[in-house]
Image (spheres, rainbow over the protein chains, first blue to last red):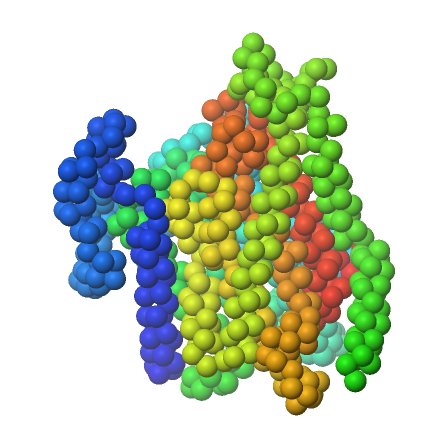
Length: 315
Length: 298
């Protein structure tokens, strides 16, 4: 088990290095000078003098080759320093940490909502296969997959905030501010999970041991909840890791719409401002969360499914 | 020898194509998708005939009016006809979506062929990059690349391709690895066929099945991503009638003119839905192993 874990963690290193290297090189090979942009901002849009741009480039360390910059950045990251934001001058790590709770609660609640909808819907669709309910909910799932989440966000905002006045339009605060963003993300994810839950359940209930359980005279709901559900949930559990990744992806758009001070919105703002250290920090953060949630899923998956555990020699 | 092979292949491919079409007729959702897409294409081509007004023509006196007898879907914040803008928007969404999907597919198939056929260092390098990109939420990378390149529709297409090629590369590489061991490839090689001939004539056509399925499924996703990034201000710029950007521009007027929020979103959803219907159907037909069994009774 320890060896498996160690190997999995070691495999994460090249991924993290690769992702940060890709962003780093894109940023530095792309046209547009961040130093000039910052000065332009300070001067209120006027063209900054050449001299000043050069000085700021020097100060920001933009004049050395990018692989040296990357090496320097990496060395500092290992020491826990993500650099300072070009825009605010504050350490990127502090900025990320202060925004983390807003994104975390959004990701968790939306994942909960999606599972809360998708698991029962998927089970019922599979058990009552080809019934009206099944067709209805699977069309709903296709609609959900095809619906732009930014549009759903705006529709929810229009209906619940502007028309009914039940929830705040946007902003950050208590639970009331979290509801609409989480529902937006959660329903979108639910669409995908419901389809997965249904097909996985369908596969399980056609197996022999379910027939045996039925032949034993067990009530059907006990067959489903007691025998089928556990196995049918396995692929769904793996999905939860990917889902957290999606929640983070969605956070970029949803946080921007609902003006939540989370990491997704921070990334969006930083991209517009060409705030390289901040972009780099966000990417690293997303990558870390994503690979570690996948790692946790992999481990729990092996626990849930003994077939895999033995195959990989984890015992 | 070659003639016989070609003839056989021709008949076989024609059979497969016929089978695909008749299966498409059976699969009602896929057929619905195909019909919607055809209608959209016709509307895009004949946009000047369908609409009465120039999508760019401003008229500030009648800004933000709702649906009325003169303006089917009302007007936007500059008094432009929303219906005209939506119809012209089909052109933008369909072309960018298809171009982005084809470009992504092209890069992915090319790299996949290289990796699978030649192996060695090239294979290692391509597959490691693929691993890295696929193990990361794609929109974050796309957003960063598109944002750094600058707000432009063209840059979004580049960014989507830069991230998306990996899924094709992996699939194509896998197919190539198994195809190149087949006897007909071996015998063609023994007859002295060049690498390029082998790749283009024997290997490529045989790994296109799953590629076409992935591509159809990904057009919807591409349209959705382009609209989303445009919504975030990274794609199309005003006054282009692009749906995502139109949605974004409508946000400040949500209370006064909700039609600016409702219609462009509806347009995006219908288009994406049509491509998803078709893609799902094609997958069921062309690749029974992937069959989702979702809509068997439809």
